[in-house]
Image 1: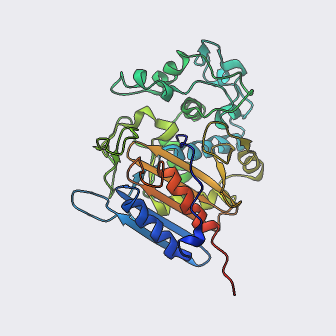
Image 2: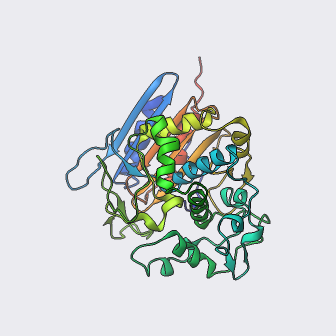
Image 3: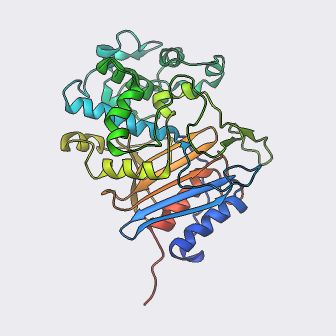
Length: 371
């Protein structure tokens, strides 16, 4: 995910309404004032599910977005990958203290990178210091398709951001390496491991890691619109629905639905996917730096402290044409999933993350009413 620009003071929920009416107003404003193509939200708590939408899945036809549709989830992929790694650790097929060199000898070296001093744990919590290959878009864009090895090689052409363990820095290369290690340990494709260990057992029929360079989204889906990170309000809009996402792979290629993300994070947060030791390791959080404000990061999981003090847990993702958030209470009993099929926002918001923050605030820090 990207770092949003500094924001003005958040809109006070009490000025905009209460309950789910407030959420719907925010969705309508995101389209009307923020200019996003379409937006969906699904909330689940002890009162049951609530689904809201505004805008369009297809701006040409005006087709509405629906609960069944699939969309790209970007860096939420990292939570699935971290879960697989932690399951392997629970089975003693690897240790989080193993170095990258133990599993991928010679892959992390050059320009000061030290695979022999970089543990799997440091990959998962972004304290490795390894350069993020996505910070060199010129090199990434030179290739029509991308293997994991190529992406790591692009990173190795640059010096690390810091010594392993000396700081925190979000790096997509970390999760490319984690995915490669999962494949080396199991001898099987990462997509198959995610399916066998997570999506099939939980019945996540709309969730998968695309194979190779397949640019399609299987099943019903919205169009994905992008301005290619151009912040100008009048920037040209491109259709990125058909996208070879091999350039993101284990760092951000997965596809899912609102319902599937609810089921996955509920199972993860309430402890069904990991034994207690690995659950504790996943939720051992470190402060972030130059990322999303007011966050901490564990092993593929993050927390956000909202402007009025409440902390929610989950992960967000950004990819060309789709930005999403899945966050909720630590026990998973109250969760919210939101997605926009665009990667910009105008008006009172700097980007979709700014919209998501207001939505989380409205749902998890509602205004107090007077009897």
